[in-house]
Amino acid sequence: MKHLKEIPVFATDAEEKAFWLTHDSTEYLDWSKSVKVRLPNLKPSNTAISVRLPIDMLDRLKIAAHKRDVPYQSLLKIWIDKKLSA
Image (cartoon, rainbow, N blue to C red; front, side, top):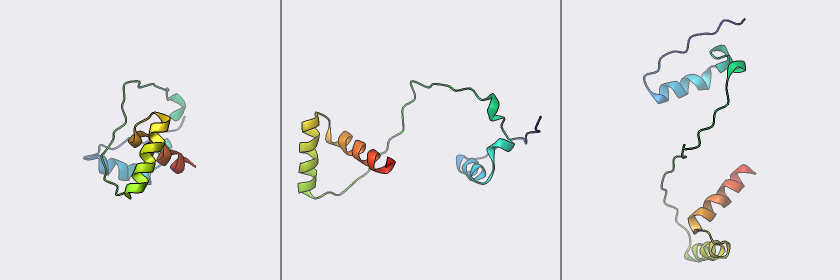
């Protein structure tokens, strides 16, 4: 059985993030004992941003959203996600 290292105590989230970016988690955790969990009430965090669009582009976006019966902000998020996932 592999001896696992002790996970340090972190003062901040940034400190923990920096640690895991430079360390292999398999030295600290036995992933073979992991259990899949479902968190149905967990909502993704969102943040508001400001994007400057030409009026014509915004109008075309709103028309496309209306044809699909979705809010234009939602359609924009769908399109951005598809492009980023490609």
